[in-house]
Image (cartoon, rainbow, N blue to C red; front, side, top):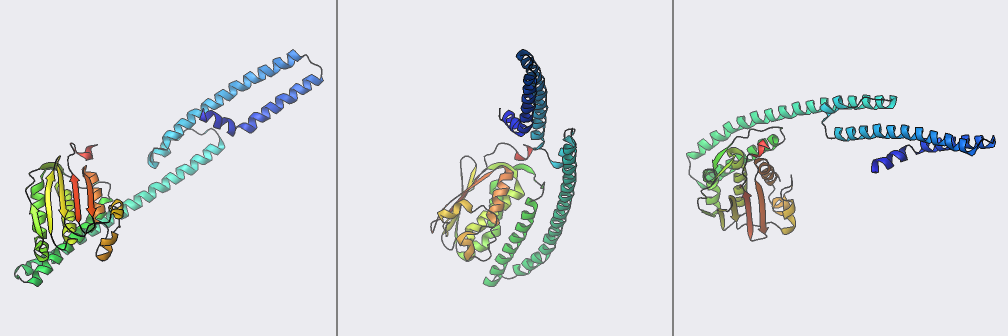
Length: 331
């Protein structure tokens, strides 16, 4: 009914002009003293023929409307081949403009894809190149066991983490990434990341409470490890004293709880936004606001969910729900 009313409004001038012409003929016939029955008979025939033409025109317009509505869901490279056959000069002109815009859009998309891939390739090479001097520095520091060497090793670990974060951020924008789904031991990932951060735990004199979770999930080990490392790193970074606790809950939920600064209630809804650092991040000038954003995006792609609860000066608890039953990349 909405389409019919819209069609009638759009063709109101034409309909009014038809009624005007019919009235003119009726008045002329009346002035020539033709029988009323002849006038009404002619008007009825004209109304019938007009209704047939109007109905046919409305039906064709409705079919075109349905087709065009479906076309709005198509991508530009498909859209330009599915446009209906033009019936008027105006439609031909509009379709020519659409074809040109589609070609320009495809060119822009190709240029963007190529540029983005070149940037990812460059930073991938850069990451691998910069890892060489980092590894060399770590090797040299292993020969010493002083407070300064421990501090430098911790800084090197953070540098490596930030480098990986840059590469991960770039890869998140790619159309496809190197996901490899398999059975993954959570304890294996947790232990590896604890080993990485052990220097920070020692320097800050934080207590680590960890009981093996004994859980195996279907996920991508590399990307899941990045999430857990980021969450553990945050827990250590924003905890000056106390402990970091790692435990599991049913069903297949990994939890990381700290006794650190905590997050203000008003900031919790925004902590997963890209670039948002919050009051804690503003105190720490190194904060980029990318860590939790990347964790959220990776969890979404892995089919997991991440939740955070926190209170100021009472600590933060992060939960990763890994109870998904199927590989989300196959959906």
